[in-house]
Length: 143
Image (cartoon, rainbow, N blue to C red; front, side, top):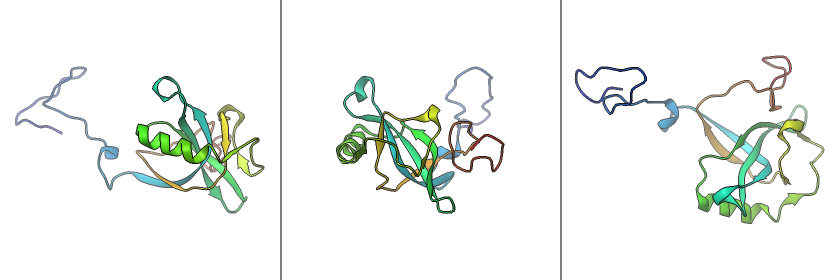
């Protein structure tokens, strides 16, 4: 998007004449998903002492299992992370539930009870060799 009349674009050069406009920068554009946190990863740095990221899944009613979609650690305020930690620290599990379909490559630090639904916004969805949602539907060995 040009902000100045007769502006020109210079590759590899930053300028306030042109700004990148992505669909996830705008409300009402992009996809949103209803997901369930089933795992958490401890925070590092300024997030030490709380969860810094969450393993998110969707429910597959056909197979009666939670299948992972993503690991989310961005977009949370410090207050969000504190609130989620306070809520989930009483809802951790000793082991993974039998109906949590998770790749060994994506095992979280802590397993969580599947007791909340979050709406998240995504710019795009892509095929993953790690996450288990829709595994094998679009590409063999990928979700």
